[in-house]
Length: 136
Image 1 (spheres, helix red, strand yellow):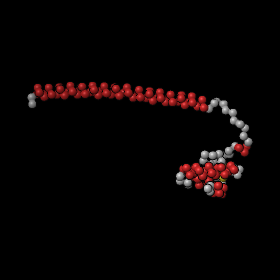
Image 2 (cartoon, rainbow, N blue to C red):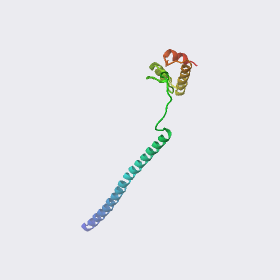
Image 3 (cartoon, rainbow, N blue to C red):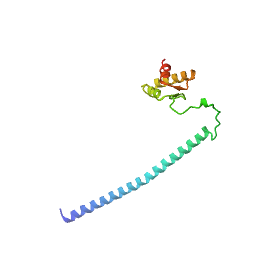
C-alpha cells in the first residue's frame, strides 16, 4: 500500500470515528434529559398519592371523635390478646395458637375461644381455659 492510500484510509476512519462520537454524544444527551423527567414524574405521582390519601383520611376520620364513656372493666389492659379480638390471654396461649399450621383453622379456634370467653365472662384466657374452649 502506498502512503497516499494509507493516508486516505486513515482520514476516512477518523471521519467515521468523528461521526460515531457525535452519535454517542447525542444519545448521552438524550438519556441525560430522560432521567430527570422520570424523577419529576415519580415525584409528581408521589405527591398526588399523598394528597389523595390525606383527603380520603380527612373524609373518613373526622378531626374530633366523641367516644362513649367506658367503664374500667371494658378497657383492654396491657398484654397479649387473642388475634382478631380484644380478649386478653397469656403468652402461652398465643404460642399454642401459633403452632396451629393452617391459618383459617387458627382463626376459627381464636374466634371460638373468644366467643366462649365472652359468654363465660372470662377476663384473661389461660391455657386451661384455652384447652377447654378450643374443643369443637
